[in-house]
Image: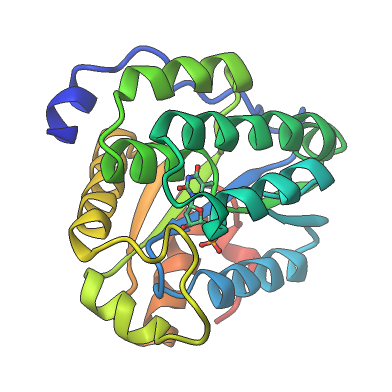
Length: 235
Ligand code: TMP
């Protein structure tokens, strides 16, 4: 279902305006639970800092005082019956604040922004997972972001059962983590669809492999998408 809705919707989503030399690079990392976002974000940061990037690492929902307060509400069980529309709007409220206080200033300052999740998570979780109308998401995206899109979105992809097994249960699952496997299956499929739809700015990494193999793919993608200069990096 997501495929059909998404594939007819092509209007706003593929324009990247972060021109080289005018703004810093905007890189986002995505994936379902347990695919290794945290360690791979650290890996990308070290790789880029090693070749001189000034990195700002941040996350969504979150990254500002208001965003972190919204994150706490979004992930807590205090409202287990939060409506999907309220969830969607809170994600974008946090994003509006994040863009204005953190992301845009850093990019204008020519810093590299590494963001743990961004709008592709909304397409995947609220669009794919919650089955919300993709046009609603796209309208909010255009309103809140204008033409700004990440230069590169790295989606760490692995089957839901592998993610679940890796994540284990370190602590009580949050409001979204406690969704069932079919929800995460739809989230995963929506991510794959995004990567197929916007191959010039979104790449899929096989995160079911061991860490070294995952990191090798990430390094290659950073070169392929002109974030890293091949000459500048050594394995
Ligand atoms: P995490 O960043 O620690 O994985 O937790 C954030 C949770 O919020 C995760 O379950 C994905 C979810 N999320 C959405 O549902 N929509 C969004 O737009 C974003 C940024 C995150």
